[in-house]
Image (cartoon, rainbow, N blue to C red; front, side, top):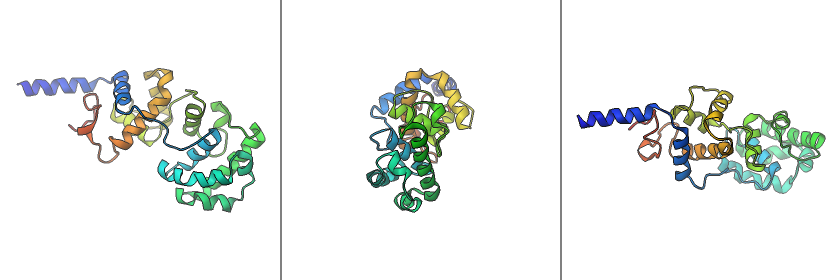
Length: 222
């Protein structure tokens, strides 16, 4: 009887989403959560984020030192030859498209913004190779502006598993998450969820037995 009562209690806890508690537990578990792309300024972060599509941050960080040594700013990259950039970013995958986007982005920065990376969502999303996710990364990490929530594959997966939303489109997931958390936590929320997704809540084999959120997670396999 006690076992049945415990099971019912656990299910009851998991049936109600608690965003504040989820955030607190993630913050406690990953106090060092941060953007894992190496960068020194907004331009470098923008380049790194474009390169991170379908590629690990670790791989991008192996490539960008060479890229930034040769092209330290938008003006230098805007004048780059496509084949030279391709050679540098080749190991990040889809290197031809990425090289093309990097050069076009740099030219747009020079032509429209004097070589500087803009500080608004509206100006960022019209740059070549930049969508809302990338713009959120730049605004949140380079400028400390919480315009929205970065939704990558980890955030997309965890938002569903934790019962935070039933949406499966990145933009809709972002819209669903924003009202659940204070604005000043939007940037860190992404880092916390990404850290959790990489270290515990794996796509194929989530380690529910080691998860700090197990009592709150409706998808937990324990």
